[in-house]
Image (cartoon, rainbow, N blue to C red; front, side, top):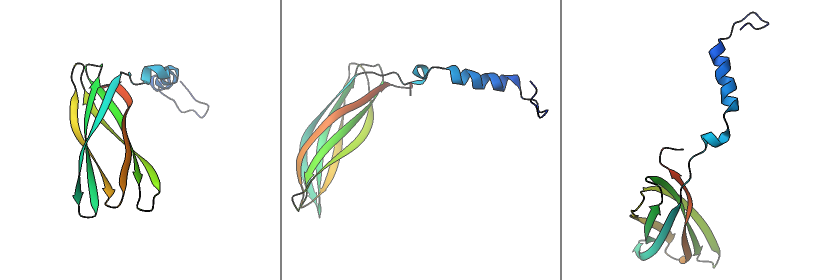
Length: 130
């Protein structure tokens, strides 16, 4: 294939560009799955000027291997009475028929209070599809 400037471009490279433009985005998207995430407050430990809050999290998926993204949404009351909400995102692999359990910690200042907390499944994708 010749260009007006006399340079030649290889046909396979041009075809690859055209094919990439024609591939639907659906084929490139990760395969979704369903997951459940449950958290249980296990206690706190004072470490100097901070308090470490510990949660036990159970995660399960309907996929043979699912990569489960989840959010821990925490509301803290600061020393001055102001409430702030924080979101921490993490992920773990989970398998169909099994539950993955592990520990999650969150640190607050000693003079702050943990008001609310909630674990939410944000997304589940089949392993290797993203």
